[in-house]
Length: 292
Image (cartoon, rainbow, N blue to C red; front, side, top):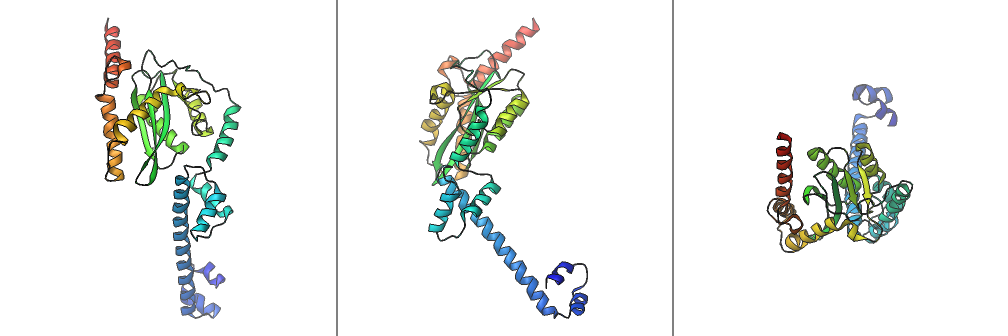
């Protein structure tokens, strides 16, 4: 049968079966069983990927292959630790403990440190961006919101929502901000020391674009106070006040709030201007000075 399979498609079934003296019915049954088996295996693999991702998300990215395999076993799903580990690598997830240790070693070899020093006022837009990732729960699922804020105006210049707190979430959010804002040279990017921010992929991205990275000191959340304040406002004024009907409703609610935050909500640190007003005022003054 293996010989027939290797030649199948090169010669007619009639010629092959006649040459090897195999009934055509036997050959067709063999091919059908193999295709059916492959389809079932592929379907089971996709289901297993979803189950592994769900267990990983429910643990807030803490569980590794060993614990996920054990949890699958309690659900009567057979999958070895080695097989779970292979699937985790394939879908791009890993235990926070492992990731943090690997990424911290990479970061430790560099010279990144806190350059912002809690100086939360700048002279112009696109001089300093600050960022953080927050977690919230909706309909028994965890979601992650990554936001980037221009320190000059407190404007949310880019944000993304995902069910995975991955480096990809951060890089996509940053690339969106960079593409839309097109900052001049001298941009500083400040964040805490989350695994995504000190990952090789993201650090390399900043280096390639000539962006200076600044990181909060360990155990000093006030070093990233502007990001912390925004997420506190978002949760208090939007997420904890609303009863969303669906995931789409929730995402649209966050979008509406950020639009309101940027365009209509006055900020005391901006002399009660909105972020959009603050930036517009800057660009208007710059235009006036260039005409003199």
